[in-house]
Length: 115
Figure 1 (cartoon, one colour):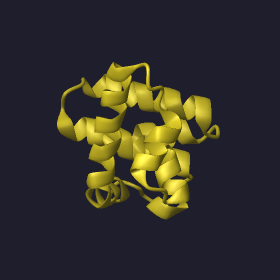
Figure 2 (cartoon, rainbow, N blue to C red):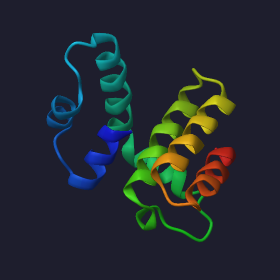
Figure 3 (cartoon, one colour):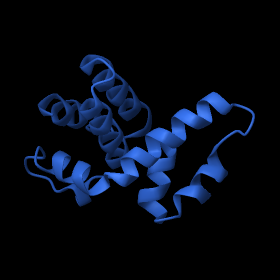
């Protein structure tokens, strides 16, 4: 989520973001994070459109960058279907509870539940 957040906020080169955020000693985590982040960035327009179609009175651009990152990452995971739907949504809600304002978890839960 941190890498996506920085990508959205700073429009920074993904390779540079990865180098700034990844612990070189943990190769398994690096592979997972790089793969997940690159997947989202490669499909960002499609994922943004998908999420946007389920925002009732909001536009994607009105959301905070953390909310955007959580929704994009989770939408990608749901689309892949490799993880249980409930697990993806629960993780997204927990991230929102930790990093967003009090209204964000309900918004994120509602949007992801529709995907």
